[in-house]
Image (cartoon, rainbow, N blue to C red; front, side, top):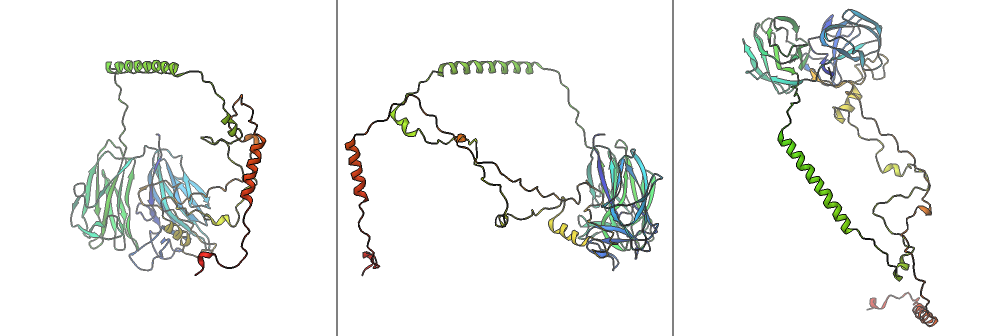
Length: 474
């Protein structure tokens, strides 16, 4: 395959199985969801603001999930050791000093299982932010179907629509009736993704894809308006699939869906082969004849217009013998006499730093994240588990190598210390050859000119009076 694309699953997605539980109170008891701006939850169904992460300080707490791909990368932060097992192969006592906890890019294409286990000691924590799945395939195109598209989605049972400003598009479908379902049939796709709501009061649901069932849980103490409720990769684009989602919780518990996204291979255009036609041959002959005629005409015009030219010298050339004439394009530029340094005065002319924006974010958002995204503890605490977050979206095509990075400042300008131009580098106008000798001025003319100059230099005596000029008198 020629290209490596990826898809990001946020930590809030029910596709992750957390042990001992998905969300609770107190990191020492298990996992607890934290947001970079909201912090920890204090009110049920509170919408989180900022970058989310699952944090634990419980030894042995883990998160498990399965994925289809050729590589995997786990993002987060830890000040403790942890283990990662991929397909039963353990990597023990790992540590990380960046926001990448684990990366493996040499997996065979297929379905894999991964488990991340934290081993914190007193005062230590591990924060898991998201997983980036890499697939060595041509980059697909994403087609999104809103929950309101009843042509693509078929609802059965008791459903209603509701609105919320936090939900993409503002509208979602909701049911409180056990057995209510939504289904669709699709083909031509390599992956499918279902987006929906995780919230306090939501509960279990079952997803069936061509008969293979997955039981998931959409319950949390937070109101999470849009996360990945289901993901399946490695689909055969030549095969049709039936997707069916059923609310399997008791009546009164809620299931809510936002959209279904399909990742479809880009259509490939094969180069068309065509036989040479007589039209092409004729056009080639015509072009050749035109080019040949143009060359002949150009040659004849040049022969006719070319004539040897003679330069006639006159007395006027002597006036411009030493004048510097400008050129159409300067071949030399004046160099600085001394190395150039930025002083305190010149430094005020331009800003000290560029107002750079992180890729994919705004200036205000990035500054706010840097200021508060240091974890729930003190920003200077040695037990702080959280570094600068990656701004990711669930189920979005992304490039983790680019997220969170900032454009570097340009290097300072090199000092310039080249010598000034020598006189030989100054371009003079060419002097005409064969100039006549200068004309000898008679002595009588010289005396007359000197008399004129002397008369003009005989200035009247200046008035030293302090009185105003005549025109100012009344």
